[in-house]
Length: 389
Image (cartoon, rainbow, N blue to C red; front, side):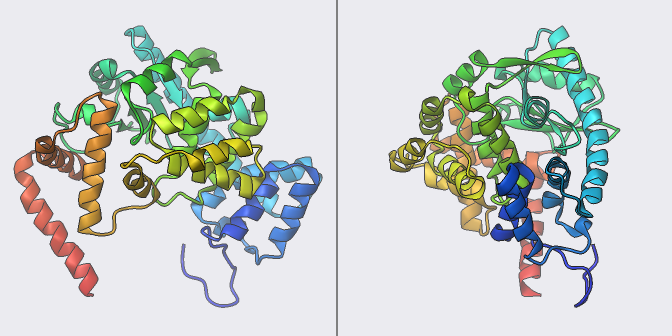
């Protein structure tokens, strides 16, 4: 996108909370509330070209267009929403087909899976693949099945991204990004989330899983309560506090299956996973932005619960990227602790250096640990040069 001069088509700043609130409410609420939000949005300097939206907000256009149509409102933004929706439908069809194929291959090898995030949310809550764009597919296998699942994906033409993964690092990584020659993307999880997993939490997640139909194939997915927790935490990852997609997903889960949410369990699991700060923030955002029917008692319980000593660091790691060498060191400590807890291991101070080196090899796409010092020096010089100039 090229910079625009004064007087040219104006774009909305996606990080503007007031604007995002208007668009989300117009896209998701009903009758008078949606009409009022859309009218308010039209008075907040909307873009002449809807495609000038930031990519995160452009994903909301199909849902907005559909809601306006149901309200009998006609506006030029609907054509942009329908255009984005057609692209989303085509891309989602490819990704859903890919998900079904991988689930089938794994099932044939005796490897059960859980389908996470976008696919089950679209099928069970949006009910129209054009309304919710996806960028990838998320599947989860048990840690004991991980190596076999990775081999099956490789045989099916999927390439794992990143550098060589030391077998000793595998238990500490929650997911592995894969790419197919046709540009389809897939994240293979062994844990639900990067921060907050544990053997007991994951075991209960599998036990509560529900079935849904994906292109004629029966698949498993977390139940609505677990799915809501996952959407809230994943949506608050660094830089996504105002991301419209997670808020829309969470709102639809809460409102379309209100009776299916076990709020007491959600509060209990949030406490057990040590995610009180981000989950409280996410649920509060749903209430203040979309009037979501989150019980006030749940918000009070989360706010008053005792925060574990490791949670402030976890919350920072979820909320934003590391900005300094000190924060980067804290990030690796946090990842080591979270990975050890997810794997059911006790983190040892002596194991941290080796973990850091292995993770750098993986993240930087290196062939071996011997390349870490040279790459670290190059990156430090590059950072210093950018700051100087």
